[in-house]
Image (cartoon, rainbow, N blue to C red):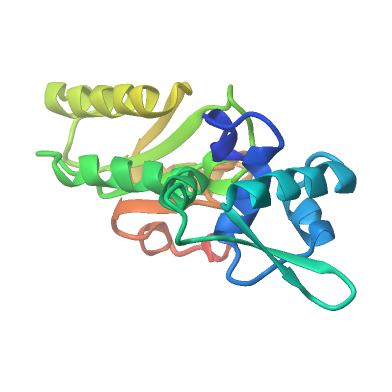
Length: 209
């Protein structure tokens, strides 16, 4: 899955980023605004895509005085599909969080960091997960490792992207933050919380706020 523009996984042309912008917009946008938010193609190319989509009825065009305003026709039969594809990132985070709720040995904390949390990357970017286990749980516990391995496979099945887990005990987390240079702790922020306690409550350092 393209972690920056998830809809491009299914719609690899310029239509994908354009539709993603419109699906996330609450009001009409000019062609230049759509181009700026899409971050791809040219202004002319984006306008051609908008005209083509308008011909299908999926995009409404409104006269905004000196320019045209474009918005997704949310009554169109295809609109729910577009909205789902535009929000694949949130759908993925929710699916991972749902799996974690079923763990017999739940983590103290779980979050997503890296490209997925930053909403950048590409088709080959790792989906990176931070798991903090209880201090009384051995890192080699068979059930814990089975759960973590199953979670990584779920990520691969859902996205096609490699999965990477950075795992620490609660005490190891505190020790790591006390000894490692902050720049190396790229899993601190930005993060998307999945389950358990907020990371800041486990080690309330200024860098976590």
